[in-house]
Image (cartoon, rainbow, N blue to C red; front, top):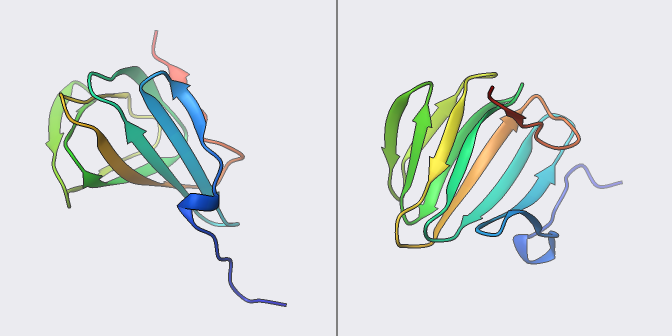
Length: 115
């Protein structure tokens, strides 16, 4: 039995979260990676989830609003968001791609809209 798990983004199913946002999920017992493709003009609403999130920007720029503070991220930037902290995401005029790492692992990232 193999002591590793191998896949690729080309083999991973895409899920549409918003007309301008798709995700692909790769998960093990202890960690979950999510590849997000953000289309220009996306404004994903404020939400929170019980997982800690670390996001790495691969292409374009992202603007997070994290607990009321605007955080602008460019290619190569890394940002960690603690569990249950409200945040939203917006994208300018260029497609952006980011990898987010979530822990602990759940079946999927549980997003709770803020009241």
